[in-house]
Image (cartoon, rainbow, N blue to C red; front, side, top):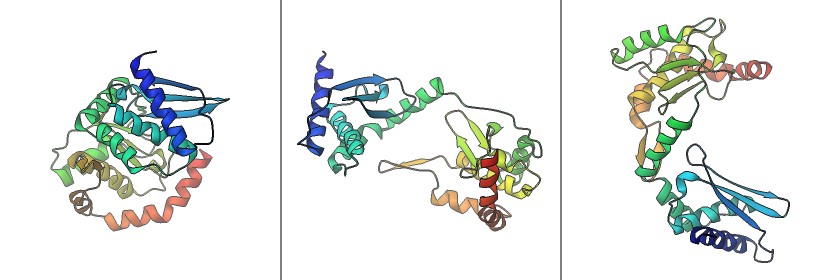
Length: 242
């Protein structure tokens, strides 16, 4: 067993004893796994505990590995996680270098589902061009535009900067949905391009004050927000019917 494996086993044993000192530590099986992005899992199977740590954290310092161990085992026990564990782990994964590496991993290994920009009712290419000209002076470079593969209601639009894609919920491609609502959702996702997310004190902010101020420039802002709020239950029923 390598020195790293010995250290990992010791910190997970320490975490188990911290949360339940009366219970024997189960046999541990800890591996690094090529997850896309920053992901980790912990599972109890039979009498053993299986831990998969994202490959991107292979070179994380021991204090960060210890923090992650306390986080994963704490979630397993549904217990409060020590602040110092969160701080040690976050100091590594929220660094600019790791965020950049995670983005590269997602771009190289990830798979983005792209259907078509031409829906049964609305054409996203046409809507993007019109919104871009009216609100952005046509300066935003067009990303890949696609309707989602499935109808959704919680998320009506999503901008994926990693894959340069804007996906709009298929739920909105309907004659029952006013065009200004589709335009508003596309406009909202375009604002994510105009106002990239900012990292402030280790936290990532997508809807900055500048973003929210610009959002209100949409001609039918209040009307679109009201329509979405009043029709979310209809969108939910339609999504569940599929």
